[in-house]
Length: 640
Image (cartoon, rainbow, N blue to C red):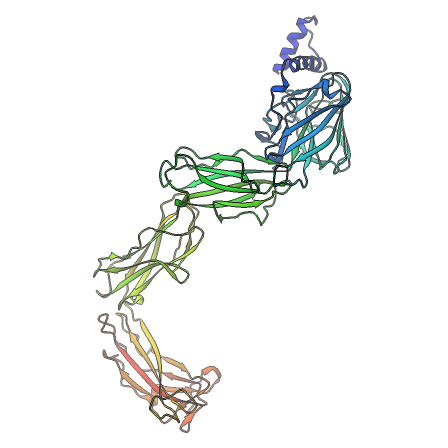
């Protein structure tokens, strides 16, 4: 609207009849003339020759940051119209160099290099790919047909790189209206329609034909129209013809892949002065290509600008302490994850990788990666013991809490104290390794029996916002992330119930060679088995509920003539008088299964597969950690 108001004022100044509104074509012609005059005033030689992505996506596709739009500030109409054309060179963000020759023919003058959007009605720059730096549009200077032949297109990578495939992009830099056209040809891959940029209002798109081939025609349509963006893979020559009824524009970009590196700080810094440098570097030379630095006390994410890659350069992502930091990098740990925002993320890319430096290799064509270092102080884990209502079951009960890495004890602490007093039993915050799984549990110490307690666990993380999953059961595992400071409290609440502990031992009594002197477990040897049952709990056992089922090993024959005996422990069991005739039964079924109705015969019976012992009465409760009712069952068998 500002351009139109200015144009109408100028039309009045040059003698247009007062009150007559200038047509769009007249205004566009006048603006072209003004742009040409301004172009002559600008010193193109002072402009850097490079390329840049747009600042804002708008309606552009997800891969919008992979487009590096060429800044044509150094375009010179006179040189380009010469027989040898104009040689242009562009330094690309990854250190590659793009060179080509541009030769212009047709209407004279043909083009000016201008900013995007080239006018208020242009689709590119208004609807999509907003905020492209520099002067990326070659804008026609007058009505007519002009051709720009771009030849000898070459991408030269920096050391350690190689060009695999790239896309040379051509876009409608203005709008194709009635009587206007864009025609483009390539000696590379057929033109791919990369984007149809909607108009600033309405939905009219100009007709297009030839997509997928090496020649594409875009013809004009009336009204406010959208624009097309097309790409050809790895051409060495591209020709674009612009047919302008007044104004027409064309833009160029180089496209391979893009990457952006972020740093997200988890938790608080070890020292408030600590800051971090996160870098994208050439794997071959270690030279930094792009970098960012954290600042202040914020946690981010902090980010580099999107880095367009024009060639297959292996890159390394790395993290370092910034100047002025107080801590060493070893005080921190980091997890790196890369995501492709424009499609499927390759499995080879880092995903929760514990690292501060890693080579991610070459990016693939069309990728738009966002890689994030989630970093924080080295993670710490603490386990401590608490007692619930009533304190200990027995005053001598003690407990050891542990942090376990597999079978290795990373940290442990054993309680002291009596009653409800808990001394020690706290590992304190222990530094652990990021990304490693740890088990938090407890074991009984001394004469304590964990069965006399109900154990619960409650874990908290001092780092708010952490995604670490905390254990919810004793013996659960946790895999810590950078910055985590997790405390798990295991609370034991005593309970009154019977808790039976059963053990079985065997002793060789004699063998046919040695007799009872240092007998060996050889065929014919006699073995005595002892099964001991102990009630360590403070509750009595339900009456006549104890049943012992013992399977006979296949190579053993039950000793029929040796009675099954019952012996009370130091603290008597409280069970009824033992009667082997009614309380012991046998099975000959495979696997020792029921029925237990078999009667053993002979001296040694190999057909006995199981013995069932069922004493009667009520087993007494433990009155202290050492006064625990018990009994033992003994029987013998022979090695066959």
